[in-house]
Amino acid sequence: MERIKIDSENYSLVKEKIKSALQRGEVVVLPTDTVYGLVADALNEKAVAKVFKIKRRPRNKPLPVFVESVSQAERFCYLNSQQRNFLEKVWPGQVTAVLPSRENSPLPEDFFQKEKKIALRTPGSRLVLDVLKELRTPLTGTSANLSGQSGDSDPEAIIRQFETLSLRPFFLIDRGILPNKASTIVDIARENVRILRKGILSESQIQSIWKECL
Image (cartoon, rainbow, N blue to C red):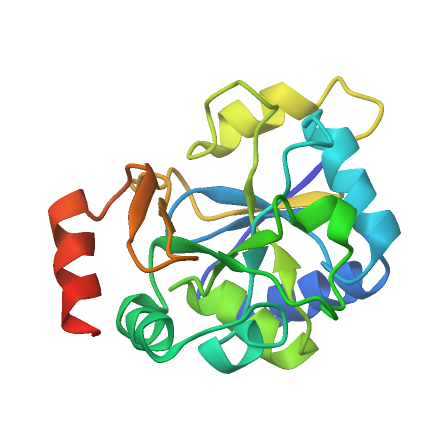
């Protein structure tokens, strides 16, 4: 797996390399505003299937999706006014929201939906946001590790996990060790907000924001 360090001087060149790889259906490892992620074009079924194989993720465990905005999210889920207001307060940011999926969503149901719900996030990473906006397609947003293992904040640990496998990411964009935790996952598909995974934002912070959005 190729390892590419990114900085302010080579940012544009690296971004173009990422876009080209994703357009070809490759799976790449990108630094986000939380941890490193396994990223692919979410509308490319072969690429998404490759993410499951690389990560060894059970097929009954759907992938979360990166979107560029609340507006793009509405292509894939239904939003009422409170849900929309909530997302506009926490995105871009470190909150993944589980929402009711649209029946006519272009995202492959087998990969991204469970119980007619889908998990979406607009990350606060400049790099990921730039790629999302320029490609104009949603991306997979799962952590860059083998299922059940940790080590998704350290490039060295990620490389060790994948380097001996026959199927692995195409390259890793190295921004050093990331200090962040995984995103907070909240289910806001119904009237109440429910914390599914604790992350950077606490439950009290999430509940307070949710109440402000009534």
